Length: 427
Image (cartoon, rainbow, N blue to C red; front, side):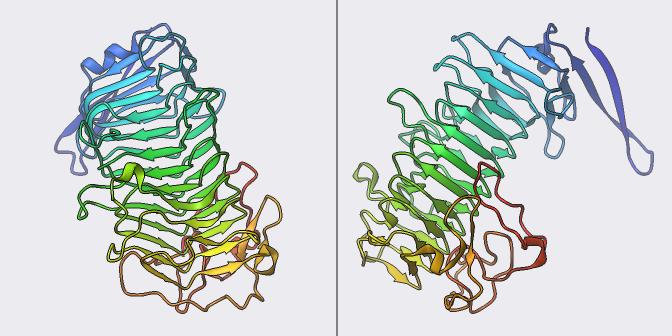
């Protein structure tokens, strides 16, 4: 049974009204068909229950007035679960759509051929507060056609057997993802049992994204990888404020090409490096890469690895803090081409940091550390204005992701233990 309710949105003067329809569906209803007649502002709500059929959505809302698909309840245990057990479709395909919000759904599938949400030819599609658990295919992808303004925010990805987020086409020609935002997500486990890599997220060639304030644990491949842009004047990606821990086989953050800004990240316990650059397939895209103010702890091969940097490529490694790698070079090679300055090295991490020995970590500088307030920043806009916690950076500032101040709201800082990173300060 479909329950219909009408919401009348009157203007402040009461001179007119806009009508948005709210439709509520149960597991046996054909909720997918509702998108055929959906108008800007309409909401399609799914009651608690398990929905076994896949859905292809074609819908166009309006700027600031999206069409909405969401679980009627956001409470865990009372949410709609879309669980496709077949192998001939994706759980949700979104095609030729714009101004669409997908929210508060639980999504799962068994087949390696089935993806959670796959986007084709979309603009301003927001996926937020959804949970993707135990998928054997990619959880969210936009690699079948161009996309613009995709937002992936506040979602939870757990116990995956494939990559969580895949935006853009591998060759950078058949499709591009532009102006994507990936913010505040928790990824806990992307460990394929076969020969697939298992990334936390990857932004393919000639695509760009803001990747901010995410928490990533236990990936088989890199936690975050961007492939760069063949146009050196293309929009730079931004990788900022992420907590990345325990890539089994790779580096925490891998840069296949620029331009990209990598700042205020914490990268811990990886099989290779905390941050690495790679001249992927010899493409020669190692340009415009800024690696500044990151904290890198206990990475097996060292802090930062550089590959394919040439003189005059506008690359920078500055004011990073590398700790806990006594038997490795903190930066490899030790003097790569580019601007390399202000980086700090603590072979014994406890000499510099509050609590680096076991999770939960506190990776701020010890108040007695001589490194506090010893670093300068330039006028360029790629320098951070704040730190990992959102605290305003003061000059001189401190190396690494943390400013070196200890306000009461962060009296106790805990990183790791499979929890999301702390919320940013509101100062």
